[in-house]
Picture (cartoon, helix red, strand yellow):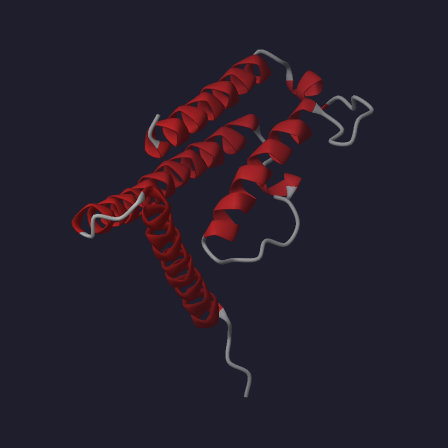
Length: 156
């Protein structure tokens, strides 16, 4: 299975499951949604917000940001606000996935083309792919660092 297909299926499942959790939560009263359950995230609302925080934090990390803490419950007082944010996070994750897999597919195709044109052995072809992967990783790190520097205020 291609990486792009695998990642799409994995994230499609995650988004499907998230929607199922929300559908169950929508059937609860506000009291049930916020009732303390005695676990680390306190309530159903807390668990949903924790799940949303995790996805949001991954997006931030992939974008070169260093997340600080989880989403604040007071910023998401209603289930509608949670689902609204989740819809935007899902779109951002899907966009990121498309960009990432496009980049990786191009990388894989380039490595295969170099290996075929150079009549390389399988070991040499793997080495070419590893070199290109390392180069790609360096490029992505440099881009993330540039965004981070641009977002950091200059101190006088």
